[in-house]
Length: 306
Image 1: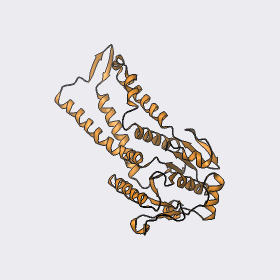
Image 2: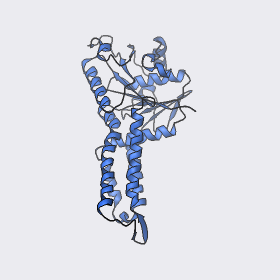
Image 3: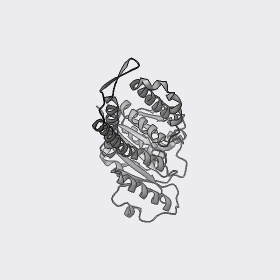
Image 4: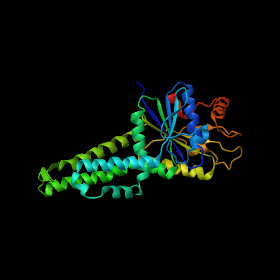
């Protein structure tokens, strides 16, 4: 049975993380690995790179390579629909209120984007668990960092909800079963649901922190702004106890305003360089030509997965 490895590609917008993830997908495909490349970026760059229209249904573009584009709005709607149904099933007495209107408003709430992406990620992990690699082309930095921070942040407030619920039990006598509108309801459902949510977020947090399951690659260019943002990304991920597998330096121009001694700036992290291409890396043939012309293997950051 294949053990699914998840590879996240993130970085400053415009550095070429979509191109880098596409190149690695093809390298792994050529090695006979079963790969799903999933774009979490609304820019739909993978569709442009492979010159194909991708949707949230996986599309095969090679012997063992599939690509899909996450529909963020659809994921938000499905998440809210599932939540609303769970509330209605557990607390039928609330159907007297028009919950649908409240959930229509919730889709515009802060944090919905990262909740949608986390839900999509967990679904992909389950659906493609027999694959070798799940490669995720992440959105720009701000949303990516909120995505990785979501489990820890959610655990903080879920812990408080659990404590509050336990205090209610301690301070107030609660009848375990109550009669309402001819039906019985379990008061324990509240605490059970809180603990279920807590378990889900703890599992996800563990996945992000486990370098055997989650491999993060930050793509950057050799300019001052890109290097500075890369350092901030590394610092913020480190504060979440999430390790970086490697850095990918995408040489976008022959003559750049280059930062000197890149290796010294990131001395503890392996760096893979993607050579400059004088022509656009658009289409399967152009991507493969670049891979074979430079014998691009990603071994500098990927030796343990070759």
